[in-house]
Length: 325
Ligand SMILES: [Zn+2]
Image: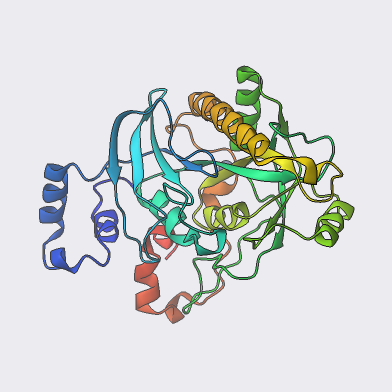
């Protein structure tokens, strides 16, 4: 759906009753005057350490409302390497939101509203293997879910859908990250399992050793719901997990000082900005059809009899389901 289409315009103003009686053309004209709408093709979600995207030009901010509430912060829209991108600080600028408090649904839905088809996600993780050292980057291709207190689907309220999730990240985006790491000169490994825990406390040693016995690579608190929701929204998604430290299983864990952790966080953020920039430049053009399966993830996923879907739910999910209903 392109910017300016009546349906997207209506959704962008979901909940804004002040404009409720205005007709679609009036809304479009008013928004064009205000310069409110600017589509983006690539979304960037920054995690701990990466709260802004250096190098963005023509920047302006946009506050979006979605049928699922408000995203973590304003979106920062601009151009990077000649591509239109939308940046969002996952925890809000100033790091205000606990992992369990992040409105993942609003964040991903808002990306869809902006026209984003690919998301580059960046986050800080602990390492569960000796070989993944602090300042290494890992692009996981699998997840294990250890969360229990967050919404991780757009569906429900009268509509049931089950998307395939055997390959939870988009190989195109993960490969772009991998090549960009090589270009920038950062250790970047494609493949590995990310344990997503609820937090906010870190693991106990028993948990950390359990995850190691499962063969998991890194542990974090935020990326699984993003991957699930991006798949439901038919957005390509991959994450770059930046190793901050070894989790508590490691003998050296307790010897690490706060200064050392902060130094690694800064180094990682600096490298991440360079890698993201190179990955954006390397991303296939928006005009070429996506060769992965992400763009049609919902094609066979909706089980509910179309006639049984409540009108309010249809309306709420029109942006995601329009082409199938
Ligand atoms: Zn994809």
